Amino acid sequence: MWERFSFYGMKYLLVLFLVQHHLFTDGEALRILGAYAALVYAMPLLGGLVSDRYLGQTNAVKLGGILLVLGHCAMAFEGVPASQTAAGAIVRDEQAISVFYFALALIVVGVGLLKPNISTVVGKLYGDNDPRRDGGFTIFYMGINIGAASAALLCGWLASAYGWAYGFGAAGIGMLIGLVIFTLGQEWLEGHGDPSNPEILKQPASATLGILSVQQTITLFSIVSVFVIWVVLQQPNGVGVMLPLVAVLFLAWFVWLLATQCNSEERGKMSALFFLIVVSTVFWSMFEQSGGSMTLFADRATDLTLFETQLTAAQFGSANAIFIILLSPLFALLWPALLSHNIEPSSPAKFGFGIIQVGLGFGALLIGLNNPDSAGLVSAWWLVLAYFLHTSAELCLSPIGLSAVTKLSIARYVGVMMGAWFLASAYGSYLASELAIFFSSIDGEDGRLGTAGFNALFTELLYYGVGVGVVVLAVSPRVRRLMKDVR
Image (cartoon, rainbow, N blue to C red):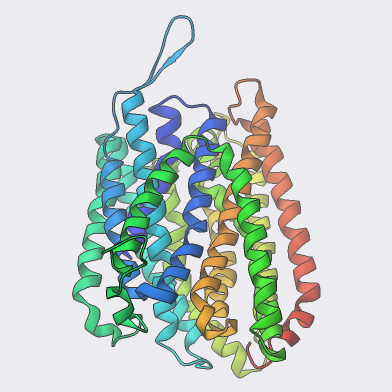
């Protein structure tokens, strides 16, 4: 919960901070967001591998938590606001921007270690065919979104009322609280997530590294990774080159795995999981508009008054998390109820329904855009409806996908496949920003998203979501057969 508090506490502030405080263009800010989000979701692939083979999930979560605390606290150093000269040149606080990139790098590596492993620990609390597993992951999802909802509301308000540093600083404090709670509550996990061979962590890593143990080497590698990512983030276009290379390497490894490490049944299950992972990329490319184009839409084109209360654009990000809190218990009851009547959709079918719904969410925004008030602003209720549809879509896909990873993966590779699940989110997040950047040019040379750009982008996403979702529903019976006894 507290990790999500810290993450979402800064997610909805990030683009607004870059555009309003440092005077980045929409395109520059969205590309940084896309690169950051892609790396945040790609790093769990390595984090899962390291935890599976060496650290264990609980140690990886602790190390990741420390890096996250440092990163979010560093975000509180906002620097001097940028200014524009009479000649039109932008003057920025370069030292503050350098610290900003370093803070993002700390967060990227921290999430890479923490995110796949906390989900894996939840999976280990249930047996392979325990019918409570999907419900357990849904409740887990609800818990982390309590943190997300409170973060968007509190950090958004602090940033607006007192300054960016207070909003980002609150996220760091939240992560510190979470790290302390996790460390003190180990007995509740009953050993789930501990290293499979603790002694290996004390052994020398190699002759080359001398006296460093395996655990010390992993810590050193994590620190070095922070500096590498710090450099990469300052050239965000490079992430668009790196992601295909990572995909090729993973695909080569996956083909080797199917060919040499799987029997016939395992091969079918892993192939079905691969399909779900690829399809999820489409979903995330739409859903992850929330921190970019949808936040800018809220800031520029929406009357954010609800129940006579004026909210900020960043606070509106809490709508997704609030709906998850409200809907998660219903979905946790829905799937078993449908199963008892033998009408529960399969996991692939749930994915199809989810993708259609997220597309329809952009349809709601289009209706609002075409029915503005006298001031030319869209009613906030259309944004609420969009978030409602996106949230119900997310509950059809994300917790189901997390559960599918733990049910369909070969046991010794579940951490890596959990990382691959988040790698799909990396591609989706990067694609989300690139789509928004492409349509930002419609409103003029300054690259600032306006009514025409929002209209074109949301129309494309509506057709994209409904079309792909229908195709997924059509092929879901065949994918279901590959899953054998797993629903």
